[in-house]
Length: 190
Image 1 (cartoon, rainbow, N blue to C red):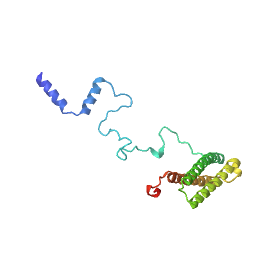
Image 2 (cartoon, rainbow, N blue to C red):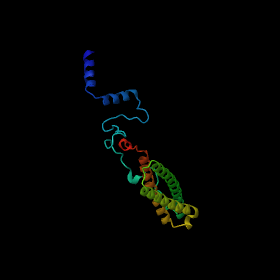
Image 3 (cartoon, one colour):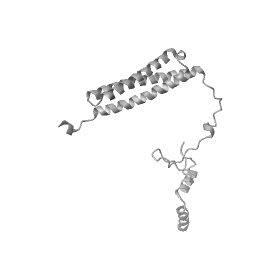
Image 4 (spheres, helix red, strand yellow):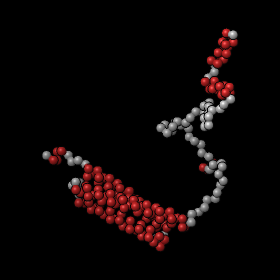
């Protein structure tokens, strides 16, 4: 009995863990649970989100379609649907523009009270806010009159222009807020 045990032990000792696990599965007659898979050669898990570029990239299916899906012909958006999307974007742009204008006005007042704003800079900021207000009025006109106010392409370009002005206004208000909150140097106070 000792020699048989010794031979069996030597046979088991020479195998790797994966072989042992496969044999154990055969004995139990069970597979791993749902969603589990034995990690054999080449079946390791890709690295998580924290390790960029080191994990395996997921292979794309042909033309980004699943095999189960049936191909449907792409329908061209109608003029009415395009206007609906444009009007939604115009409403969003109007709201963001009003919010950015109010924030910038508050930042200008705060910087002016802190004596950090020159007359020229204040004029430039007021002019920028007036220009944004004109663009918002054009957006309101577009929202009220819809197709009668302007063409679809002009409406799209107006929304793009307004969003660019909103971005400029937000950047300027950040700078003004930082300027207003900046502490003066101690040397200038003495």
